[in-house]
Length: 212
Image (cartoon, rainbow, N blue to C red; front, side, top):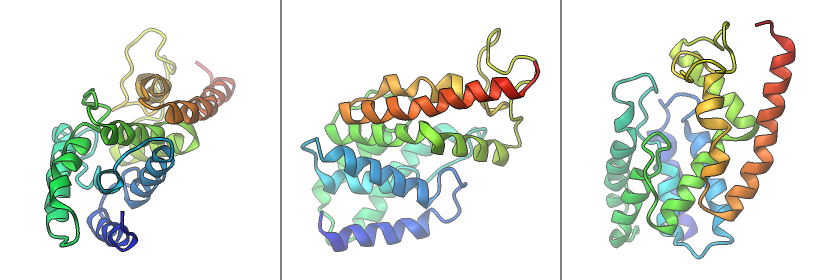
């Protein structure tokens, strides 16, 4: 992708994402872009598709406890296309591929990625659910939803199903600790395996600090 086009896309994203919650803000988008470009070094993909898809994948983002949450990906895909249409230098024949990549990105939607760019975007976003940044984002989201830090009677979901909308720690058990097994590319798998060790260390330390 032309450097000036990339800069223009990022500047637009800064304006579009300024009201997003702290776990889905412009810095999240830039980290996903960083992940995507890292994975792309070992994959023969189209950066004209991957870069805007990474930057705009959460351009519309409803709170996880909102009834509209399931619409975030499809509305982000639509908004991304609208934005890219307005950029004269962006190749319009690639809009449909950006749309599909964003639509297929959601972890919650459980959609199987079709194109290579879509697979890389899925991996890049899912890497944000691993490692130290995932811990920070988990509790930032919990604060915005006014949920509990953990279930005081059964913190580690030993006798119940995880309920991450009400208990922040539950997200470890229905997403963070399993996402490493859902990567599409080898590069992402390697990164996720390394970062998942941090998650397990956190859980083990947490067990030592609480009474239950």
